[in-house]
Image (cartoon, rainbow, N blue to C red; front, side, top):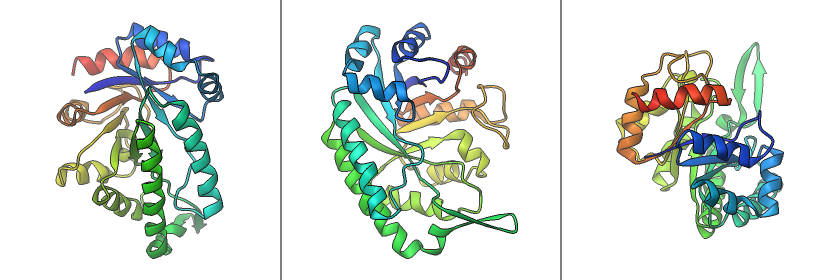
Length: 256
């Protein structure tokens, strides 16, 4: 198992994040393409040197809104961005994380309805085919593709069917603990009930209504989640979003 942190909104450079990771004795930092300073430094080509300086590995979070089940022009654009940053990260990015995107929503009388669920027979084959291409790009650049569960409303039941298809296709899986809590805990049940391999875990606490809480501030069975991560030799990203929360959460995790 390896333990890491995300890059933080409060910082303006990757080195600030790497200094904190070194201070906390972490193994890796998750870079994030949603952050302009991350994209800029990857494009400058200085990330590998900085990682070596601080003795760290790196994973990469792809754009939150990226949807590989949508129409071809949008998928093509995101694929071009993936090729660009996967090549820039070749040699230091170990995993690249993608959201299992819920897609477009129609709200009727306060209830969310998901268009992909209505179009599932055509949507799923397209999604799987595109993720196979994504996996190939990642692999060619030395990274493992992993797909993360998101906190789309509980009515998006098709997202669980997606994960069964992802596993059958041999794709890597990432359990986000807080997102799963908001969705009712079904993804964790599916992983454990079917003994699915877990490559990464985004670990944060949740009270069932809010997530990304510091460890120990919610109701999740964090000791059990740690045991699951150790069993799978997973990359564990303590996905709290401030330096203060990280300084609280990392010792808490180590003492579980």
